[in-house]
Length: 451
Image 1 (cartoon, rainbow, N blue to C red):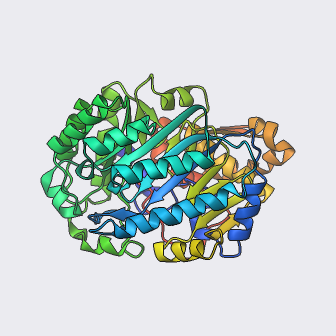
Image 2 (image 1 turned 180 degrees about the vertical axis):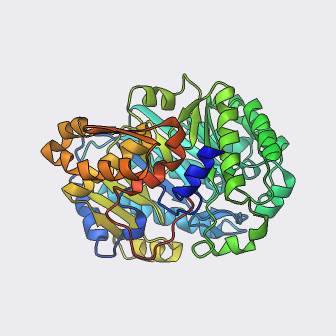
């Protein structure tokens, strides 16, 4: 309890800070960095370095109330088919701009609900992507799967196109919790989906769970975890529910009085984490877990763990090319987000222009701070001498930041000379500690909870 009081005194239960899946964060993206920057960055890529490709499918047959992603509801395939045509046009623009010989190391379909696509559209999209981005050696293809929006035919189509990892959204199996977030999904439906994936030869399975949901309790989240573990996932992402109704209007449908309070939310996260570790999984960063033989655990052990818009990753590609509405590309020199609204994205594509609508160019100082924040988020440690190997003497300009962190967050950090380490007890503070290095916090910006 003394530790909880100390964490509370440091502001853990009140702070709202970025998740640092990028730095600078998307909150500071500007329309001054858009399609022209995007085109130039694409043309300047080194064809010898494989890239990651992310394709956003923004459509859902049902809009889950807790979700803050860029999505839209549809009951027909007509807008989906039109959207795939626009994506094909964007791919044609990319083909005419990318340097010859560029290959794809990773491919991820996210959403929305990628499994809203019927088999013919799955085949059509996958082949259009490969026409522009031939797979590199050790290529991986992952897809976000909604168990209520998939069947054997769709899974077989994805497997035929090379899907090697499935990421299943679960959130919570309790019926009252599901009712409160507008996502009804039985354990039986989820288990049947997993069985179909295994039958199709998909060996790698991710599962997404969420803590801090309305009506969630320690007993309920433990029951959800027990059921999830019977599915034998290779990885778990345990996200804290971000209640941001000023951003995601649909979250106004969630009864705020039913949300766990700050202390209950903290205990939900700790209980879940302990349960996964007890089950033999390795804790990865602040909110992921993986079986020891999984590539994510190996990446952490070998200090190759990275962080991007999907969370923690073993992906070593330096460039991420985002395709589709709202997708964000990461280039060596900056970030560019495609027009977020599907209509605006379609309009830009129809005009024959790249869809980049806003972004940020990275200065050398930004790149230094980005790598330092990523080191804290991935390794809970920052060593300026190691950073100097990549950034030179400028790395030691961060020493005042380390001293500020050590002063503010004692006794949860250890600071000696040019190295700072977050203790195991201090890891709930990681996002707050990383935010000390953030030099791009917009005034009045409201982020999600740190806890």
